[in-house]
Image (cartoon, rainbow, N blue to C red; front, side, top):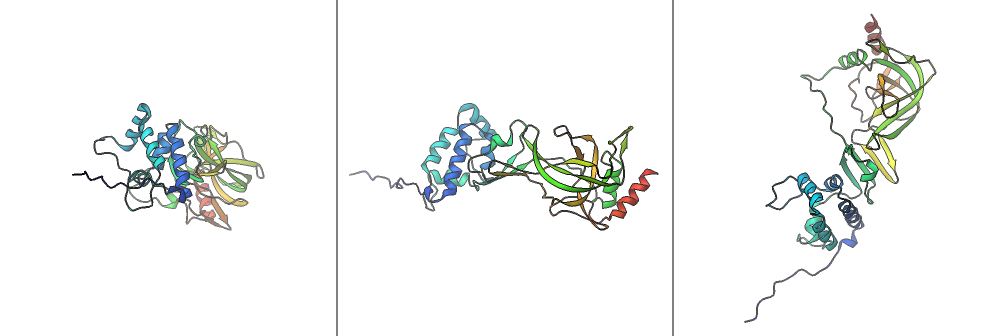
Length: 295
């Protein structure tokens, strides 16, 4: 009796029909070749499944792979199989679904040991950089006046009206992070912070002022890179800014304590996307509280 030969799927690769998959595969193999755990984990979907016998987390599994040369070899072999246009998940299809993410747009975690440029992949078009912060937790949502009072009473208590002519993103922390730099001129100083006898250098009306804000957007080669909480601040606008006493260690610029607010007559407007807690206040409110803090 002749043995039955198991039915097999035909050896074919339909992934060439999708340019996005080809770019994704090339980018992932490049990351695997250099053992970039951060880039590979950023490219993986949250639904990525590991073999049942693996008790490690996805991050631990990938880190162990760097040390042992695995799973890079298996990943390369699977990705090179490509993917068949079928509802069955076999060969490369299983890997493709496990690593399903738009190859040209992805999010990476902040890594202080490796510059953003080093972590970019050939297929990248836009990359978001996420950096976790420990934000204060309040029993109740702080009111705008309370937030303003805290700003004016602390190291960011120098409130200035500034005509901003230039807004640009710059790489800092050895290329691992982004800040937004505002350049313009001083219109009016509403208050000046003083802590332990330290004050900011005197600001002259019409004088040049350069200040930086955490987060922003830059272009590296052809890739647009931005932090996840970045805001697009329009140029050639008048802003209310709160300046810090201590300069930025990377740029030497004055630090901003909160997102700048656009000034419209007596009103203060938040730029779309801004997380400022000062909305609802007027310029007169700021001046009035600044005067009371001087007493």
